[in-house]
Amino acid sequence: MSKRLVLLWVFMLLFSGCQNYVEKERETGYKGKARVNPFLAFERFVEMETGQPLEMRERWQEMDEDAALVILPATMLTSKEYVKQLKSWVASGGHAVFIIDHAEMRANEWSDSMIDVDVPDVVQGLCRDVGMTLDESAQANQFQKLKLGEEEYRVNLSSSYQLAYDGDSELPLATADWGDGAVTFLVDGNLMRNRTIDQEQHIEVVASLLDMSREGRMIFMRGVGISFFGMLWERGWMVIEGVVVLMLFWLLRHMPRFGPLDHDAEDTQMRAYDHHLEMIGNFHWRLDRGRSLLEPLRMEAQELCHHWQMKTGRIDEGLFEVMAMQTNLSLEQVQRAMTEWKIKDSLTFTNTVADLQLIRKAFR
Image (cartoon, helix red, strand yellow):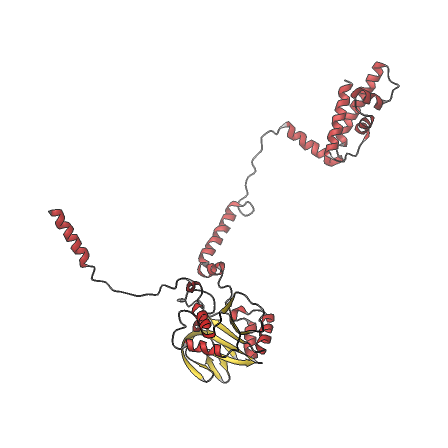
């Protein structure tokens, strides 16, 4: 009975606290394609509005004549040749839209790290060529209104840059004619990103930009996004510096060139006889191709053959003929073994030594 009362008392305590809670909502990010493509909503809106898909490109490609609109981060255009190609395409009727801040293909929509980018000099020059002025501020500028053509829209944008064009300053967006086409600078890419495209009148501005372009393909040059090593350097630079310091410490401690000198230990081990013989043979071979090694063998073979001739009474016979007869070697082999001084290779040297040993053995 006491156990039941204890269990009942525990359950009452547990359930009594279940009613005291507060519900809080927080954004945890997107799932699926929207997690890796922050412009997915803009891409689908273009397809719905124009009836054709938005072509996504990861790197610069020469513009086709049938393309109508190209949207690209300002940091992507780094070559004068690219600017020249873009100007020619715009002059023939194209519409180029440059995005400055919040233009990179990062999926983190809750970070301010994409503000204060470095606009390349060639893009700054293009901005001046079309009559605009692009100024950088010490802090982020907040924009609540945006004027496009004769219409004014409510927006919620922020950027470290601001535009000046046609007598107006501190603009978030400006469009200038160039030949038969137009060039647009947009200081904040949040106008088109998933999290903010439905805020204020952002979607109306996007629709107006699409209406300003001629009929044709829509292209979004998104770039390759941030690299793994770039993100590692931005977020984990302290870890990288620690690893570099650790590597330097290891080099100073273990490498003789950087650390303390090691005392040479006295080598008292006796080397094998065949090792000494190999070293001596290698020395003589490099010195004179083994001539100094063959000469003593040849002199000994000649003396042994001469004594044999005197002992057997055959002193009148030729030396090489006697050697060939006693060893069953050809006369050419005996002559080569006794007279050839320039040995071509180690194999010939080995054969010559073998023949001399056979001659010595025949007369002993």
